[in-house]
Image (cartoon, rainbow, N blue to C red):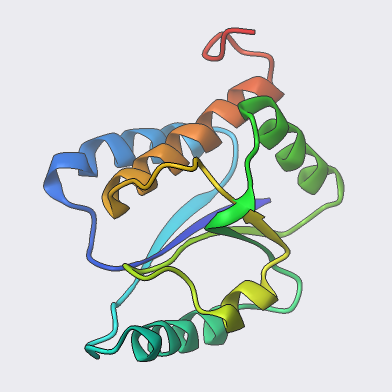
Length: 154
């Protein structure tokens, strides 16, 4: 199973880039993993921004992808629940597991409708770049939980 992290916005900021790369490299010991950064819309109108960004994402989806939107209205999972979710996807021979982080205004409804799951990291609002780091760390943590390794303390 290949894990994709899709994010709308700028490339990783230097203050967070090393940490994201570290966790991405760690994940790669368990699963192939890849980041794809989609460009932000140039519009000044919120709804148009979300529509523009959604077109890029929708055009990149493939038929059998399992897509998880990071969305403030999604279900919150514990680290154990995330690990169980990922194990179920692997058991079902899922080819691509895609986690999507929307742009500054979130994901357009057209994208959310195509997603198989909606996941909320927290009820708090985080800076976009920090969400990338939290996502990478939590996926790494889930990988170690699945393998019963010491990183996560039960």
